[in-house]
Length: 277
Image (cartoon, rainbow, N blue to C red):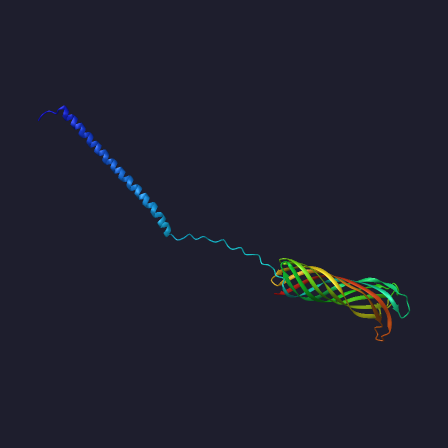
């Protein structure tokens, strides 16, 4: 066996270098394959996500609840109701003539005051915020007052309003369930007049009268429940002047005297209505 030469050493070193280079190439190829498969896997995964997302059910979006408008109060239709309150009627008596030939002379004035209750029925129709209506009202009343006659003292004159009625038209403006209105029309009163003795209180002469006149008024009404409303109202009655013949109440029918009696009245009422609409 011959001893190794210098050329043999060179060959061995070159062979070692070649093996190392092949080993490095193998390692590099392995890393390249790993990177390649990693990139391909990521690409496949990214492509599959949209497809899977397409298979998912659509997301349900909850719709916001619809706005419910506030209910609008409707004043149209028929209504019927009751009312109550008080009033004051101003009466002034002026003698025109009497059985004794006295000259025309003022006898003085007084206020007939008291309470009243009654009812009303009407119909309204609404156009936008405007409300129009017609109404009939009838009331029992007990307005009473007197004064000592300036001509026949100590005798005194007494006036009493037993009833009144109103037939009116209305124009109003509504703010939903609040109605503000004015009214006007005809008025009628049932009146009783008495001339009493200032000594024993007996009735000397008396008269009854149905008097027609006019009225204006204003009110406010609030709808507080379906079909129900409550309100307040003021009315002024212009009843004018009338010549009234006062007779002996005993039935003898003897003429006693004629007075011009002027009358106006003011009313304050609380009203409750039921609406049929």
